[in-house]
Length: 96
Image (cartoon, rainbow, N blue to C red; front, side, top):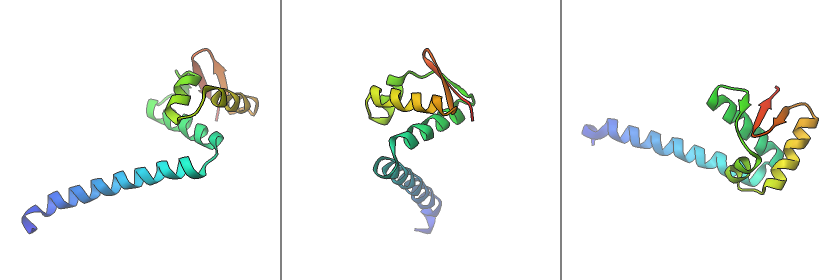
């Protein structure tokens, strides 16, 4: 077993990372409100793309978060009224 210690360490670390990722997703789905989920989603997309301007439609967000476009549109409109985002055609801009 000592011969494969590095491999075992790699496998266990990979499983641990994936398990933590699954727990995060379960936590978001089971315990977070949809408006929190959308806000987290937008911030993660912004960090991933290194831009405050996101080329996303309401339908894209709905598909990624497994909800309806109408729910996403309603929540994004509330976020726009509260000054968190601006909504344009096919894009969103994060303000904070």
